[in-house]
Image 1 (spheres, rainbow, N blue to C red):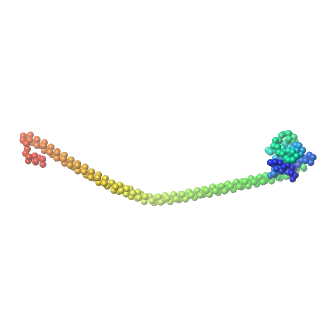
Image 2 (cartoon, rainbow, N blue to C red):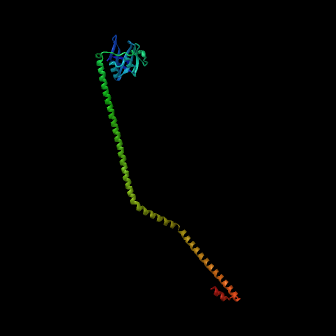
Image 3 (cartoon, helix red, strand yellow):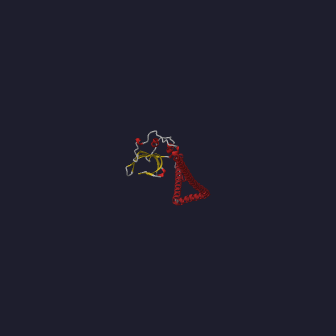
Length: 265
């Protein structure tokens, strides 16, 4: 393919198909660039200025079929620019004025024989590209499914690990519970022995206290007995005194000592 443009930021553009020519120069044509990107080019000033727009195969097919005008194709381009030749190099200008575009409503209006082969190549390329896109999508779906499968396997393995750990914990808990039940009587006996030992130890440590308490109780009992005897003697003496006085008043004479001793006895 013939190289038509060498553009900054765009690269080399090669002539793919010519719709119209003037003085053996293409004035409406299609170029192909890096990555098989296609550009529709319209000459505004011969040898000096062109409008270039990035197009898809579908737009070119519609243009060949006269379903859209030449101007509409450029208007529908997301990327379009003006190319200028200053005699030494090409320059790119992003400002595309409407006056530079082809006449509104002008169709391609070319015979099917002249554009049929190129249209067929565009259709074939579009089908191939769609097949590639479909294969890519299917590949992406496979990769996505494989990734999901791996994530599922990883999640399942984690679940298995958790279940296994839970089962081990359950078995350990059951074992500990069984051991605890078997140790229950032993623990009760140890508790009883400890309680008894504490009581004995406390009693042993406070032996002096208990001895002093016993001595105090005994002394209290002795004092009480002495007080009871003294009270009885006083009551007997008072009784003797009352009897003597009574007897003396009856007989008008004091009793003899023998009688007092008798009565006191």
